[in-house]
Length: 496
Image (cartoon, rainbow, N blue to C red; front, side):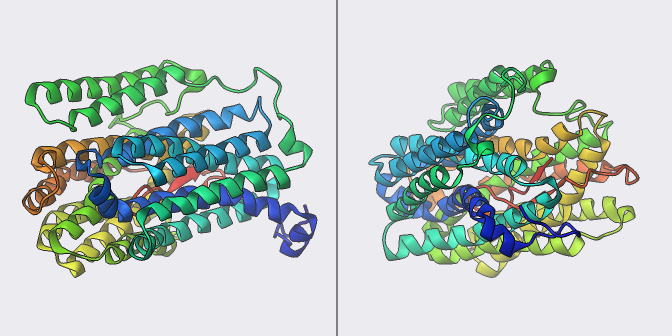
Protein backbone atom coordinates (compact mmCIF):
# COMPACT_ATOMS: atom_id res chain seq x y z
CA UNK A 1 0.00 0.00 0.00
CA UNK A 2 1.37 3.41 -0.98
CA UNK A 3 0.43 6.58 0.88
CA UNK A 4 1.79 10.10 1.10
CA UNK A 5 3.27 11.80 4.12
CA UNK A 6 -0.03 13.61 4.66
CA UNK A 7 -1.92 10.30 4.88
CA UNK A 8 -3.63 10.88 1.55
CA UNK A 9 -4.18 7.90 -0.69
CA UNK A 10 -2.02 7.72 -3.80
CA UNK A 11 -4.71 6.19 -6.01
CA UNK A 12 -2.35 5.50 -8.94
CA UNK A 13 0.07 3.57 -6.76
CA UNK A 14 -2.86 1.84 -5.11
CA UNK A 15 -4.10 0.67 -8.50
CA UNK A 16 -0.64 -0.42 -9.60
CA UNK A 17 -0.20 -2.53 -6.48
CA UNK A 18 -3.52 -4.31 -7.04
CA UNK A 19 -4.91 -3.12 -3.71
CA UNK A 20 -7.40 -0.77 -5.36
CA UNK A 21 -8.86 -3.68 -7.33
CA UNK A 22 -9.27 -5.60 -4.10
CA UNK A 23 -10.96 -2.65 -2.46
CA UNK A 24 -13.36 -2.23 -5.42
CA UNK A 25 -14.44 -5.87 -5.34
CA UNK A 26 -14.88 -5.73 -1.57
CA UNK A 27 -17.05 -2.63 -1.95
CA UNK A 28 -19.12 -4.37 -4.63
CA UNK A 29 -20.74 -6.37 -1.83
CA UNK A 30 -22.07 -3.16 -0.27
CA UNK A 31 -23.35 -1.98 -3.65
CA UNK A 32 -25.21 -5.25 -4.27
CA UNK A 33 -26.77 -5.28 -0.81
CA UNK A 34 -27.77 -1.61 -0.67
CA UNK A 35 -29.11 -1.41 -4.24
CA UNK A 36 -31.20 -4.54 -3.71
CA UNK A 37 -32.67 -3.15 -0.49
CA UNK A 38 -33.77 0.12 -2.06
CA UNK A 39 -35.05 -1.57 -5.22
CA UNK A 40 -37.58 -3.97 -3.70
CA UNK A 41 -40.25 -1.44 -2.77
CA UNK A 42 -40.57 -0.24 -6.37
CA UNK A 43 -41.04 -3.75 -7.79
CA UNK A 44 -43.61 -4.67 -5.13
CA UNK A 45 -46.74 -3.56 -7.08
CA UNK A 46 -45.84 -5.70 -10.10
CA UNK A 47 -44.75 -8.61 -7.94
CA UNK A 48 -47.95 -8.64 -5.87
CA UNK A 49 -49.96 -8.41 -9.09
CA UNK A 50 -48.37 -11.64 -10.29
CA UNK A 51 -47.82 -13.62 -7.10
CA UNK A 52 -50.72 -12.26 -4.99
CA UNK A 53 -50.11 -12.55 -1.24
CA UNK A 54 -50.56 -8.86 -0.42
CA UNK A 55 -51.06 -9.97 3.21
CA UNK A 56 -47.36 -10.92 3.30
CA UNK A 57 -45.89 -7.70 1.89
CA UNK A 58 -44.62 -6.60 5.32
CA UNK A 59 -42.64 -9.83 5.58
CA UNK A 60 -40.48 -8.85 2.59
CA UNK A 61 -38.61 -6.31 4.72
CA UNK A 62 -38.94 -8.00 8.11
CA UNK A 63 -37.47 -11.33 6.97
CA UNK A 64 -34.67 -9.65 5.02
CA UNK A 65 -33.61 -7.54 7.98
CA UNK A 66 -33.63 -10.56 10.29
CA UNK A 67 -31.26 -12.35 7.93
CA UNK A 68 -29.02 -9.29 7.69
CA UNK A 69 -28.87 -8.81 11.48
CA UNK A 70 -27.96 -12.43 12.17
CA UNK A 71 -25.44 -12.71 9.32
CA UNK A 72 -23.85 -9.35 10.10
CA UNK A 73 -23.28 -10.38 13.71
CA UNK A 74 -21.94 -13.79 12.69
CA UNK A 75 -19.60 -12.63 9.91
CA UNK A 76 -17.53 -10.41 12.18
CA UNK A 77 -16.82 -13.41 14.39
CA UNK A 78 -16.36 -16.09 11.73
CA UNK A 79 -13.36 -14.34 10.19
CA UNK A 80 -11.39 -15.27 13.31
CA UNK A 81 -11.76 -18.94 12.43
CA UNK A 82 -12.36 -19.05 8.65
CA UNK A 83 -10.33 -17.19 5.99
CA UNK A 84 -11.72 -13.84 4.88
CA UNK A 85 -11.74 -14.92 1.21
CA UNK A 86 -13.76 -18.02 2.05
CA UNK A 87 -16.27 -15.98 4.02
CA UNK A 88 -16.73 -13.51 1.16
CA UNK A 89 -17.14 -16.24 -1.46
CA UNK A 90 -19.75 -18.07 0.63
CA UNK A 91 -21.62 -14.85 1.45
CA UNK A 92 -21.72 -13.80 -2.22
CA UNK A 93 -22.95 -17.23 -3.33
CA UNK A 94 -25.60 -17.18 -0.63
CA UNK A 95 -26.71 -13.75 -1.82
CA UNK A 96 -26.83 -14.91 -5.45
CA UNK A 97 -28.83 -18.00 -4.48
CA UNK A 98 -31.36 -15.86 -2.61
CA UNK A 99 -31.75 -13.51 -5.56
CA UNK A 100 -32.25 -16.47 -7.88
CA UNK A 101 -34.98 -17.90 -5.65
CA UNK A 102 -36.73 -14.51 -5.67
CA UNK A 103 -36.42 -14.26 -9.46
CA UNK A 104 -38.04 -17.64 -10.17
CA UNK A 105 -40.44 -17.79 -7.20
CA UNK A 106 -43.90 -19.03 -8.26
CA UNK A 107 -45.50 -17.90 -4.98
CA UNK A 108 -45.08 -15.33 -2.23
CA UNK A 109 -43.89 -17.84 0.44
CA UNK A 110 -41.05 -19.01 -1.83
CA UNK A 111 -40.20 -15.39 -2.62
CA UNK A 112 -39.92 -14.69 1.11
CA UNK A 113 -37.61 -17.69 1.50
CA UNK A 114 -35.39 -16.11 -1.14
CA UNK A 115 -35.49 -12.81 0.72
CA UNK A 116 -34.28 -14.50 3.90
CA UNK A 117 -31.36 -16.09 2.03
CA UNK A 118 -30.60 -12.75 0.37
CA UNK A 119 -30.61 -11.04 3.76
CA UNK A 120 -28.15 -13.56 5.16
CA UNK A 121 -25.80 -13.08 2.22
CA UNK A 122 -26.18 -9.30 2.01
CA UNK A 123 -25.75 -8.71 5.73
CA UNK A 124 -22.59 -10.82 5.71
CA UNK A 125 -21.20 -8.97 2.68
CA UNK A 126 -21.59 -5.59 4.37
CA UNK A 127 -20.01 -6.75 7.62
CA UNK A 128 -17.14 -8.45 5.77
CA UNK A 129 -16.50 -5.33 3.69
CA UNK A 130 -15.67 -3.35 6.82
CA UNK A 131 -13.66 -6.19 8.30
CA UNK A 132 -11.73 -6.37 5.02
CA UNK A 133 -10.67 -2.74 5.20
CA UNK A 134 -9.37 -3.32 8.72
CA UNK A 135 -7.52 -6.49 7.71
CA UNK A 136 -6.12 -5.56 4.29
CA UNK A 137 -5.32 -1.83 4.39
CA UNK A 138 -3.21 0.47 6.60
CA UNK A 139 -5.04 2.22 9.40
CA UNK A 140 -3.88 5.64 8.19
CA UNK A 141 -6.09 5.53 5.08
CA UNK A 142 -9.19 3.95 6.63
CA UNK A 143 -11.08 7.29 6.71
CA UNK A 144 -10.60 7.76 2.94
CA UNK A 145 -11.64 4.20 2.16
CA UNK A 146 -14.64 4.38 4.45
CA UNK A 147 -15.56 7.65 2.76
CA UNK A 148 -15.62 5.89 -0.62
CA UNK A 149 -17.80 3.16 0.87
CA UNK A 150 -20.16 5.81 2.22
CA UNK A 151 -20.47 7.25 -1.27
CA UNK A 152 -21.41 3.79 -2.53
CA UNK A 153 -24.32 3.70 -0.09
CA UNK A 154 -25.45 7.07 -1.42
CA UNK A 155 -25.28 5.88 -5.02
CA UNK A 156 -27.24 2.74 -4.16
CA UNK A 157 -29.91 4.70 -2.29
CA UNK A 158 -30.60 6.68 -5.46
CA UNK A 159 -30.05 4.03 -8.13
CA UNK A 160 -31.90 1.15 -6.45
CA UNK A 161 -35.46 2.52 -6.78
CA UNK A 162 -34.81 3.78 -10.31
CA UNK A 163 -33.28 0.44 -11.36
CA UNK A 164 -36.24 -1.49 -9.96
CA UNK A 165 -38.73 0.79 -11.69
CA UNK A 166 -36.92 0.65 -15.03
CA UNK A 167 -36.54 -3.13 -14.99
CA UNK A 168 -40.21 -3.56 -14.13
CA UNK A 169 -41.38 -1.15 -16.82
CA UNK A 170 -39.09 -2.42 -19.59
CA UNK A 171 -38.76 -6.14 -18.80
CA UNK A 172 -40.11 -7.75 -15.63
CA UNK A 173 -39.65 -7.52 -11.88
CA UNK A 174 -38.04 -10.96 -12.09
CA UNK A 175 -35.24 -9.57 -14.23
CA UNK A 176 -34.45 -7.09 -11.45
CA UNK A 177 -33.56 -10.00 -9.17
CA UNK A 178 -31.83 -11.78 -12.05
CA UNK A 179 -29.36 -8.89 -12.24
CA UNK A 180 -28.43 -9.43 -8.60
CA UNK A 181 -28.07 -13.17 -9.15
CA UNK A 182 -25.41 -12.45 -11.74
CA UNK A 183 -23.86 -9.77 -9.53
CA UNK A 184 -23.57 -12.14 -6.57
CA UNK A 185 -21.98 -14.85 -8.71
CA UNK A 186 -19.50 -12.32 -10.15
CA UNK A 187 -18.70 -11.12 -6.63
CA UNK A 188 -17.93 -14.69 -5.52
CA UNK A 189 -15.66 -15.35 -8.49
CA UNK A 190 -13.86 -12.02 -8.13
CA UNK A 191 -13.34 -12.54 -4.40
CA UNK A 192 -11.75 -15.92 -5.02
CA UNK A 193 -9.41 -14.57 -7.71
CA UNK A 194 -8.50 -11.16 -6.30
CA UNK A 195 -8.22 -11.85 -2.58
CA UNK A 196 -5.08 -13.95 -2.76
CA UNK A 197 -2.99 -12.26 -0.04
CA UNK A 198 -2.01 -14.08 3.18
CA UNK A 199 -4.22 -11.72 5.18
CA UNK A 200 -7.25 -12.84 3.14
CA UNK A 201 -6.50 -16.55 2.83
CA UNK A 202 -5.72 -17.37 6.46
CA UNK A 203 -7.69 -16.84 9.68
CA UNK A 204 -6.28 -13.85 11.51
CA UNK A 205 -6.95 -14.69 15.15
CA UNK A 206 -6.00 -17.44 17.53
CA UNK A 207 -8.89 -19.84 18.03
CA UNK A 208 -10.98 -18.88 21.03
CA UNK A 209 -10.14 -15.15 20.97
CA UNK A 210 -13.26 -14.01 19.09
CA UNK A 211 -16.25 -12.93 21.19
CA UNK A 212 -18.97 -15.58 21.47
CA UNK A 213 -21.88 -15.44 19.09
CA UNK A 214 -25.13 -14.21 20.75
CA UNK A 215 -27.20 -17.27 19.81
CA UNK A 216 -29.77 -16.90 22.59
CA UNK A 217 -30.40 -13.18 22.08
CA UNK A 218 -30.67 -13.29 18.29
CA UNK A 219 -32.75 -16.47 18.40
CA UNK A 220 -35.17 -14.74 20.74
CA UNK A 221 -35.25 -11.70 18.43
CA UNK A 222 -35.99 -13.85 15.38
CA UNK A 223 -38.86 -15.67 17.09
CA UNK A 224 -40.30 -12.37 18.35
CA UNK A 225 -40.35 -10.71 14.94
CA UNK A 226 -41.87 -13.81 13.31
CA UNK A 227 -44.60 -13.88 15.97
CA UNK A 228 -45.43 -10.21 15.39
CA UNK A 229 -45.44 -10.65 11.61
CA UNK A 230 -47.61 -13.78 11.86
CA UNK A 231 -50.12 -11.85 13.98
CA UNK A 232 -50.93 -9.71 10.97
CA UNK A 233 -51.29 -12.34 8.27
CA UNK A 234 -54.78 -13.59 9.12
CA UNK A 235 -56.44 -11.08 11.43
CA UNK A 236 -58.44 -12.66 14.26
CA UNK A 237 -58.88 -10.78 17.52
CA UNK A 238 -57.83 -13.47 20.01
CA UNK A 239 -55.18 -15.15 17.88
CA UNK A 240 -53.60 -11.92 16.63
CA UNK A 241 -53.63 -10.36 20.11
CA UNK A 242 -51.90 -13.36 21.64
CA UNK A 243 -49.25 -13.54 18.92
CA UNK A 244 -48.58 -9.80 19.19
CA UNK A 245 -48.36 -10.00 22.99
CA UNK A 246 -45.96 -12.93 22.91
CA UNK A 247 -43.90 -11.16 20.26
CA UNK A 248 -43.56 -8.01 22.36
CA UNK A 249 -42.69 -10.09 25.44
CA UNK A 250 -40.04 -11.82 23.31
CA UNK A 251 -38.52 -8.45 22.37
CA UNK A 252 -38.28 -7.53 26.05
CA UNK A 253 -36.67 -10.89 26.75
CA UNK A 254 -34.20 -10.32 23.89
CA UNK A 255 -33.08 -7.04 25.49
CA UNK A 256 -32.81 -8.73 28.88
CA UNK A 257 -30.75 -11.65 27.55
CA UNK A 258 -28.43 -9.24 25.75
CA UNK A 259 -27.83 -7.28 28.96
CA UNK A 260 -26.93 -10.48 30.83
CA UNK A 261 -24.23 -11.52 28.31
CA UNK A 262 -21.42 -8.92 28.61
CA UNK A 263 -19.02 -10.88 26.39
CA UNK A 264 -21.35 -10.88 23.38
CA UNK A 265 -23.75 -8.01 24.03
CA UNK A 266 -25.09 -6.00 21.11
CA UNK A 267 -26.16 -2.89 23.04
CA UNK A 268 -24.61 -0.64 25.71
CA UNK A 269 -25.96 -0.46 29.24
CA UNK A 270 -28.71 2.04 30.09
CA UNK A 271 -30.55 1.04 26.92
CA UNK A 272 -33.86 3.00 26.73
CA UNK A 273 -33.20 4.73 30.08
CA UNK A 274 -34.65 8.25 29.97
CA UNK A 275 -32.14 9.32 32.61
CA UNK A 276 -29.23 8.81 30.23
CA UNK A 277 -28.35 10.41 26.86
CA UNK A 278 -27.55 6.88 25.65
CA UNK A 279 -31.04 5.67 26.55
CA UNK A 280 -32.73 8.73 25.08
CA UNK A 281 -30.74 8.44 21.86
CA UNK A 282 -31.47 4.72 21.49
CA UNK A 283 -35.16 5.37 22.19
CA UNK A 284 -35.19 7.93 19.41
CA UNK A 285 -33.41 5.56 17.01
CA UNK A 286 -35.81 2.72 17.79
CA UNK A 287 -38.99 4.82 17.64
CA UNK A 288 -38.22 6.45 14.30
CA UNK A 289 -36.89 3.26 12.73
CA UNK A 290 -40.17 1.49 13.49
CA UNK A 291 -42.38 4.47 12.64
CA UNK A 292 -40.97 5.23 9.20
CA UNK A 293 -41.40 1.75 7.69
CA UNK A 294 -44.92 2.36 6.38
CA UNK A 295 -44.02 4.29 3.24
CA UNK A 296 -40.92 2.17 2.70
CA UNK A 297 -42.94 -1.06 2.56
CA UNK A 298 -46.35 -0.04 1.22
CA UNK A 299 -45.88 3.39 -0.41
CA UNK A 300 -45.38 2.34 -4.05
CA UNK A 301 -48.08 -0.35 -3.79
CA UNK A 302 -50.64 2.14 -2.44
CA UNK A 303 -49.79 4.89 -4.91
CA UNK A 304 -50.04 2.53 -7.87
CA UNK A 305 -53.24 0.85 -6.66
CA UNK A 306 -55.06 4.03 -5.60
CA UNK A 307 -53.94 6.65 -8.07
CA UNK A 308 -52.28 4.82 -10.94
CA UNK A 309 -49.01 6.65 -10.28
CA UNK A 310 -46.27 5.06 -12.44
CA UNK A 311 -43.73 2.88 -10.68
CA UNK A 312 -40.91 5.02 -12.04
CA UNK A 313 -42.40 8.09 -10.34
CA UNK A 314 -42.55 6.30 -6.99
CA UNK A 315 -38.94 5.29 -7.56
CA UNK A 316 -37.93 8.92 -7.98
CA UNK A 317 -39.80 9.89 -4.79
CA UNK A 318 -37.96 7.25 -2.80
CA UNK A 319 -34.66 8.34 -4.36
CA UNK A 320 -35.43 11.96 -3.44
CA UNK A 321 -35.68 10.93 0.21
CA UNK A 322 -32.18 9.50 -0.05
CA UNK A 323 -30.84 12.64 -1.67
CA UNK A 324 -32.38 14.81 1.07
CA UNK A 325 -30.69 12.67 3.71
CA UNK A 326 -27.27 12.98 2.07
CA UNK A 327 -27.45 16.69 1.28
CA UNK A 328 -28.66 17.80 4.69
CA UNK A 329 -26.13 15.56 6.43
CA UNK A 330 -23.39 17.42 4.55
CA UNK A 331 -24.91 20.84 5.29
CA UNK A 332 -25.00 20.33 9.07
CA UNK A 333 -21.80 18.28 9.36
CA UNK A 334 -19.73 21.22 10.65
CA UNK A 335 -22.36 22.68 12.99
CA UNK A 336 -20.91 23.77 16.35
CA UNK A 337 -21.49 21.47 19.37
CA UNK A 338 -23.63 24.05 21.17
CA UNK A 339 -26.29 23.68 18.45
CA UNK A 340 -26.37 19.90 18.72
CA UNK A 341 -29.55 19.64 20.78
CA UNK A 342 -31.40 22.13 18.55
CA UNK A 343 -30.39 20.23 15.41
CA UNK A 344 -31.45 16.88 16.85
CA UNK A 345 -34.83 18.29 17.89
CA UNK A 346 -35.35 19.94 14.51
CA UNK A 347 -34.57 16.72 12.68
CA UNK A 348 -36.94 14.75 14.92
CA UNK A 349 -39.76 17.20 14.29
CA UNK A 350 -39.18 16.92 10.53
CA UNK A 351 -39.37 13.13 10.67
CA UNK A 352 -42.57 13.20 12.73
CA UNK A 353 -44.11 15.76 10.38
CA UNK A 354 -43.29 13.53 7.41
CA UNK A 355 -44.94 10.52 9.07
CA UNK A 356 -48.11 12.50 9.84
CA UNK A 357 -48.10 14.18 6.44
CA UNK A 358 -48.16 10.86 4.59
CA UNK A 359 -51.51 10.10 6.29
CA UNK A 360 -53.04 12.92 4.23
CA UNK A 361 -50.83 13.03 1.16
CA UNK A 362 -50.97 9.34 0.19
CA UNK A 363 -54.79 9.03 0.25
CA UNK A 364 -55.05 12.37 -1.59
CA UNK A 365 -52.59 11.23 -4.25
CA UNK A 366 -50.85 14.60 -4.47
CA UNK A 367 -47.37 13.92 -5.84
CA UNK A 368 -45.95 17.31 -4.68
CA UNK A 369 -47.23 16.69 -1.13
CA UNK A 370 -45.97 13.11 -1.09
CA UNK A 371 -42.59 14.29 -2.32
CA UNK A 372 -42.53 17.02 0.34
CA UNK A 373 -43.25 14.46 3.09
CA UNK A 374 -40.51 12.20 1.75
CA UNK A 375 -38.07 15.12 1.76
CA UNK A 376 -39.08 16.00 5.31
CA UNK A 377 -38.54 12.43 6.47
CA UNK A 378 -35.23 11.93 4.67
CA UNK A 379 -33.97 15.39 5.56
CA UNK A 380 -34.90 14.93 9.20
CA UNK A 381 -32.84 11.75 9.37
CA UNK A 382 -29.96 13.49 7.62
CA UNK A 383 -29.97 16.36 10.12
CA UNK A 384 -30.45 14.39 13.32
CA UNK A 385 -28.69 11.06 12.86
CA UNK A 386 -25.00 12.14 12.87
CA UNK A 387 -25.54 14.10 16.09
CA UNK A 388 -27.68 11.45 17.78
CA UNK A 389 -24.96 8.93 17.03
CA UNK A 390 -22.37 11.30 18.47
CA UNK A 391 -24.39 11.72 21.68
CA UNK A 392 -24.86 7.98 22.09
CA UNK A 393 -21.19 7.14 21.54
CA UNK A 394 -19.79 10.06 23.54
CA UNK A 395 -22.13 9.38 26.47
CA UNK A 396 -21.51 5.63 26.63
CA UNK A 397 -19.69 4.27 29.66
CA UNK A 398 -15.97 3.56 29.50
CA UNK A 399 -15.33 0.40 27.57
CA UNK A 400 -18.73 0.53 25.81
CA UNK A 401 -18.13 3.10 23.08
CA UNK A 402 -17.34 0.53 20.42
CA UNK A 403 -20.49 -1.37 21.36
CA UNK A 404 -22.46 1.89 21.31
CA UNK A 405 -21.29 2.87 17.83
CA UNK A 406 -22.20 -0.55 16.44
CA UNK A 407 -25.51 -0.54 18.35
CA UNK A 408 -26.99 2.32 16.32
CA UNK A 409 -27.21 0.44 12.98
CA UNK A 410 -28.15 -2.75 14.82
CA UNK A 411 -31.07 -0.99 16.52
CA UNK A 412 -32.10 0.55 13.20
CA UNK A 413 -32.25 -2.85 11.52
CA UNK A 414 -34.19 -4.33 14.42
CA UNK A 415 -36.53 -1.35 14.21
CA UNK A 416 -37.07 -1.95 10.49
CA UNK A 417 -37.80 -5.63 11.08
CA UNK A 418 -40.27 -4.92 13.88
CA UNK A 419 -41.76 -1.97 12.02
CA UNK A 420 -42.32 -4.02 8.87
CA UNK A 421 -44.05 -6.72 10.94
CA UNK A 422 -46.27 -4.11 12.60
CA UNK A 423 -47.16 -2.46 9.27
CA UNK A 424 -48.39 -5.85 8.12
CA UNK A 425 -50.74 -6.01 11.12
CA UNK A 426 -52.11 -2.50 10.48
CA UNK A 427 -52.43 -2.98 6.71
CA UNK A 428 -54.18 -6.32 6.96
CA UNK A 429 -56.46 -5.16 9.78
CA UNK A 430 -57.38 -2.14 7.63
CA UNK A 431 -58.43 -4.18 4.60
CA UNK A 432 -55.58 -6.01 2.88
CA UNK A 433 -56.49 -9.27 4.62
CA UNK A 434 -59.38 -9.46 2.12
CA UNK A 435 -57.07 -8.92 -0.85
CA UNK A 436 -55.82 -6.00 -2.93
CA UNK A 437 -58.56 -3.69 -4.18
CA UNK A 438 -59.12 0.05 -4.37
CA UNK A 439 -61.46 0.28 -1.37
CA UNK A 440 -59.09 -1.67 0.85
CA UNK A 441 -56.12 0.38 -0.36
CA UNK A 442 -57.92 3.64 0.45
CA UNK A 443 -58.59 2.49 4.02
CA UNK A 444 -55.05 1.20 4.47
CA UNK A 445 -53.54 4.43 3.12
CA UNK A 446 -55.00 6.41 6.01
CA UNK A 447 -54.56 4.10 8.98
CA UNK A 448 -51.13 2.81 7.97
CA UNK A 449 -49.53 6.17 8.71
CA UNK A 450 -51.77 7.42 11.52
CA UNK A 451 -51.02 4.27 13.54
CA UNK A 452 -47.35 5.22 13.80
CA UNK A 453 -47.79 8.91 14.68
CA UNK A 454 -47.57 8.07 18.45
CA UNK A 455 -44.13 6.56 17.88
CA UNK A 456 -43.15 9.72 16.01
CA UNK A 457 -44.23 11.75 19.03
CA UNK A 458 -42.23 9.43 21.31
CA UNK A 459 -39.15 10.00 19.15
CA UNK A 460 -39.64 13.78 19.40
CA UNK A 461 -39.99 13.64 23.19
CA UNK A 462 -36.75 11.68 23.44
CA UNK A 463 -35.04 14.22 21.17
CA UNK A 464 -36.23 17.11 23.32
CA UNK A 465 -34.71 15.54 26.43
CA UNK A 466 -31.33 14.79 24.88
CA UNK A 467 -28.52 17.00 26.11
CA UNK A 468 -25.40 15.21 25.02
CA UNK A 469 -21.98 15.93 26.58
CA UNK A 470 -20.52 18.06 23.81
CA UNK A 471 -17.19 18.19 25.61
CA UNK A 472 -16.63 14.43 25.26
CA UNK A 473 -14.55 13.56 22.20
CA UNK A 474 -15.35 10.79 19.77
CA UNK A 475 -12.68 8.59 18.30
CA UNK A 476 -11.63 9.82 14.85
CA UNK A 477 -12.53 6.37 13.57
CA UNK A 478 -16.20 6.87 14.31
CA UNK A 479 -17.96 8.11 11.22
CA UNK A 480 -21.15 8.04 9.26
CA UNK A 481 -22.03 5.48 6.67
CA UNK A 482 -25.09 6.25 4.57
CA UNK A 483 -27.30 3.31 3.74
CA UNK A 484 -30.90 2.32 3.49
CA UNK A 485 -33.56 -0.17 4.21
CA UNK A 486 -36.16 -0.90 1.64
CA UNK A 487 -37.80 2.10 0.17
CA UNK A 488 -35.75 5.12 1.16
CA UNK A 489 -32.74 6.65 2.81
CA UNK A 490 -32.86 5.52 6.38
CA UNK A 491 -30.26 2.94 6.98
CA UNK A 492 -27.38 5.29 7.85
CA UNK A 493 -24.96 3.34 9.94
CA UNK A 494 -21.96 4.05 12.09
CA UNK A 495 -18.81 2.02 12.28
CA UNK A 496 -16.25 1.81 15.05
